[in-house]
Image 1 (cartoon, rainbow, N blue to C red):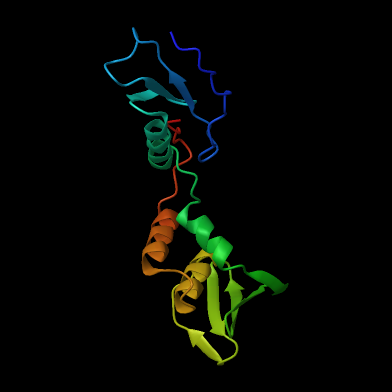
Image 2 (cartoon, rainbow, N blue to C red; image 1 turned 90 degrees about the vertical axis):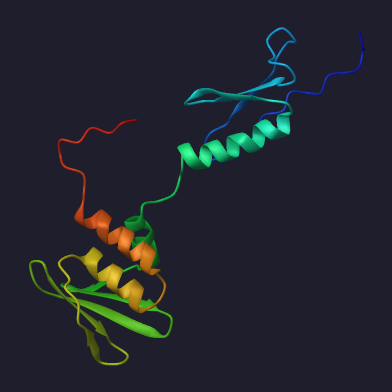
Length: 166
């Protein structure tokens, strides 16, 4: 039996707010050469690996795929296109060299103006989020894929009776 000193227990790095547990298994428990058991704090045992480094990498992939921490498309656009109310019924946003204004003409009726050019963008805008999506696309700070995902999310909100699966 070797008398080499054991390494101090080191905590695994946190990935997407989760800290995995990687345990070295006894020879009786190990499946062949897979000596390290990877456990997710939410899912339990994820798998067994030959090396601890492989287990860490596997947890990074697991966390990204199963427990993503990414904001929804609409939240991403709300972050990128920050509208501030300047006067009641009018919101402004500066993106690049352009100044954009959103005017509310009535309930669910908005108009988007590029102030620096004196141009009105022709689009159907029923909410401020619609205006953010169009504005972000016009200013090219929002990709068409993100704009489409946000529009789908905006149109297809979960019904009040929906039960989350988590």
